[in-house]
Image 1 (cartoon, rainbow, N blue to C red):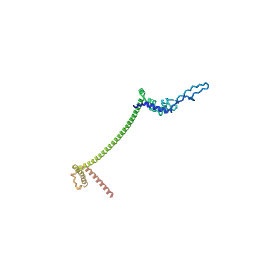
Image 2: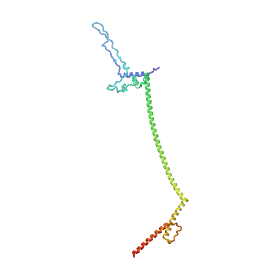
Image 3: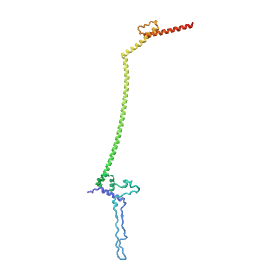
Image 4: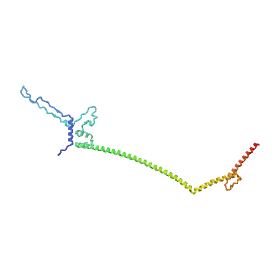
Length: 278
């Protein structure tokens, strides 16, 4: 059966490799070296001197491999107060490379209300939930982008529909106006034709002929009577018959008075001329 690989073990291995590369090798502590392993001969007493203890074997400090590598932090006034999370953790820090790094990142993004629930979870569960939360955030962002794009497209479509509706309304109004103008011109033409036809029909009717005859007879009759009166007045010797003529006696008296006055004036003028000649 294949052994099941845990995410925590993989994270620890990656962290150890990163720490080893960052520490630039292992730290070796050397013991005191002896000049020789051979026993020293004491010439005075003839006794062998006890052999000095062997040098201690080089021990490897495994603490450097266990502890995660910490990147150096630039010293300076106020640098620790203004450092971001990325600057504090270093450029090579990642969630999968160090369990402590992952815990720091998750501790910064987890709410205090969910702290107790998260503490009960294992590292694999926390990472899984963190990745799930990131996925949900990506999905939410993509859905918001799609909705914003759809909203923009809907707004553009509504604007285009409104503009097309306005253009259609303007075209419809122009067409209606053109039809009304054509109808008015047709009505004017038909009205003029109707008036001409009515006048022509009235001229051909008997009523028009009778009206024309009455008007002509009254006009020419009145004028003819006037001429007869003038002839009778100017030339009484002609014997013009005035019996059938309606006479205006006041007008005749006035005319006679004017005629007598003119005759008297002419007689007086002639007498004066004769007296001057004598």
